[in-house]
Image 1 (cartoon, rainbow, N blue to C red):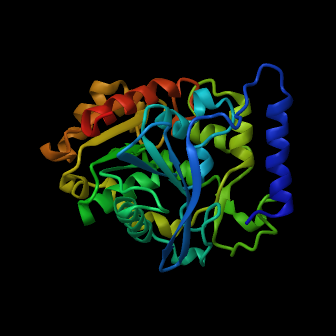
Image 2 (cartoon, one colour; image 1 turned 135 degrees about the horizontal axis):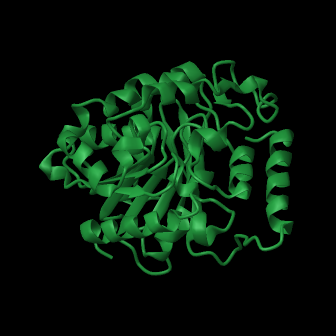
Amino acid sequence: MHTKFRALAVSAAVTLLCFTPGIAQADDSTPGRCQDVSFPVPQGTLSGTLCLPDGPADAVMVLMSGSNYNHVYWDFPYEPETYNFRQAMNKAGYATLVADRLGNGASSRPPSLSLTATATADALHVMVRSLRAGLAGNAPFAKVVTVGHSLTSSTSIMEAIGYHDVDGVVLTGYSHTLSVPDVLGVISSYYPAVEDPGFARRGYDSTYLVTRPGARAADFYGLSPDPNVVALDEATKETFSLTEYPDGLLATLPGESSLMTAPVLLVDGSRDRMVCGPGFSVCADSATLQAAESPYFSPAAKLRAYVLPDSGHAINLAPNTRDYHAVVVDWMRSIVGH
């Protein structure tokens, strides 16, 4: 799916990581027995990777990135002991399915104006159902938890209230108190993917969008990010369509989240300019976020909120992201066991 130019850009970033002194690298010994899988959906094929922990597992986490990201967000190759969420969950004993949204990574790339959050939610349901039935020759999973980031936090809510078929939902980069000026500021950094050197020759139609070079640090990061992380993020950035937002944003309004019946963990970074409200007020600390968000969820959701200090929107790529990993593992043990 990648053009030569894109491949060279990624290769250059990875080469930088490999030959920079003091930088840890991923290797073939990292936890998780992985296999590629695919799911037919009305608009094409959704691609993903299923990874199993070293021991038996009856619980699986479905990881889908939001707009601007693909599977790399969850399976980050640089300093994986710190930044690789997928690996951390496998180490904790949970299986993971990391999937690319339509239009991203190895998944099909339909016309951008045909993409919607509703279609992503329906595709997520296909994956949940397949995991419960036994995917790619593996035993059926008794427990399925969906994990979203930004846009796919909304689609995780849409899937959960539409089908009531998951045992828990992790929402990240999400709240009911969006900072509209900051959201508009981030949107202003987008431009057509066909104008970006890394995507121009990949056959995208003119309404697929991507962040402008150099915009990601201000848009998605908090305080003191690792410059090598930002560089690799830029090299592996992804496209999206604005048509994914209208129905997805409905899940950030009062109403839909109140229909959640599965337990919910909500995680935001304290410096997330888009979801923390004016002056980051909603994300002052975990108790403040808990108090702000609890009215939007039913008692059945058993909402637990956590704020990762100093992190921006991309909490998987914050220097202290392991603290968030520990919170997720603790919550997983409380709802599906070890």
